[in-house]
Structures are given as C-alpha cells and as structure tokens.
Length: 229
Ligand code: ADE
Image (cartoon, rainbow, N blue to C red; front, side, top):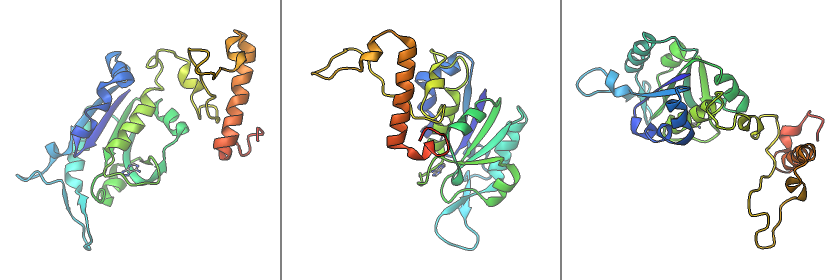
C-alpha cells in the first residue's frame, strides 16, 4: 500500500511514520507513506495557499489552485483508489472503515486547515470525507496519522503476530477481554485461574465471555441486535 498525505504543516507528520509498527511496515516494504508540503505547489512569491472567505467571516480558506496542482502532479505517478479529505463534518472513522481501506493499494489524504478547503476541492477531487470524532482539531494532520496507523497495522505481515489484529477490540463487534502477564501475583492481586491452566478451549471460552461482559458494561450499544445482550 502507498499513502500520500498533503498538508501545510508537514512537520506534524514527521514523527508518527518513523517509529515502531509504522516504520517496520515501511522497512518491510509493506506500506509507504509520503508527506507533501502544499506550499511547494503554491502560486506566486508569497507561497500563498489560503485566502479570505467570499462573503466575509473569520478564518481563512484553503485555495483550490495549489491543491489541484498538487493532486494532479501526484496523479501523474499513480491512480488513487480513494482521495480522502480529513474534516470534522466527514463520516465517523471506525474499524469497518479501517478494514476496507486497508485493502486498497493507493490512498491520497488531504489535510484541512484554517476554515477548511474551498468547497470546489471537495466537489472535484474528494471521494471520501472522514472525521475521527465529534471534536475539532486545529488541522487534519493528527487525524490523518490516526487513520493511517489504523489502516497500516491491518496489512498482512505488518504485525509480528499475524493473529493479533484479529483479536482487537471491535474486530468481532466486541471489546477485547482483559489481559494479564507476569507476575501471576502482584501485591495480593491474582490472575483468573483459567488463564494459567493451559487449557486452550476453556481459555477461549473465558475470553469470549469476558469480552461480552466488558462490552455489556462499557459499550452496551455495540451489542444491540447481536443476540448477546
Ligand atoms: N480536522 C479537524 N478536526 C477533525 C476531526 N475531528 N476529524 C478529522 N479531521 C479533522
């Protein structure tokens, strides 16, 4: 998979992709992420990428020309399966969306800033608009990093233990069960006996029941219509 990200603040995206699982994905050649500075596509000496909103009001709007130049330059090298705009008024990101995006080959993510992009950018180029929740960030960069992380870790071979993404919270519609590691006793606090038994079927049964219990407690909305409520 290849992900291109367009931003006016490339520095915000320098960290996430050079560490841990995301770096490993890049080193293994499973996912590449390239960050593009929108100012490199700006018109005029001032490198202007934003302007006042027609009709007035506070806040600047990202101009269509630099964005169009950038997207069209990137499209010379590849065909994108989705061109995504990060925005608080987009569809709320969730695990099924991460699963389906992880099957794509080429993604382009545009990060909004200021008051957002000229509506004509959305009308002309964007195939999907994503929000990471009902709150407003100062730009789409951190949201883009969240989306890219959730997608890349699902690509087969990225995680060391191939099965571990399958047992994540939400992957089967339930929250993940509690987990424990050594020591088996800490200041009088033990570990559920069954987890020390080595009996795989019983352990799986315990984990499933604990998942349902935890989901009932913390996110009963996830169980509606499942038959487990
Ligand atoms: N840009 C600003 N806020 C955002 C959000 N909640 N999700 C996605 N992009 C954003």
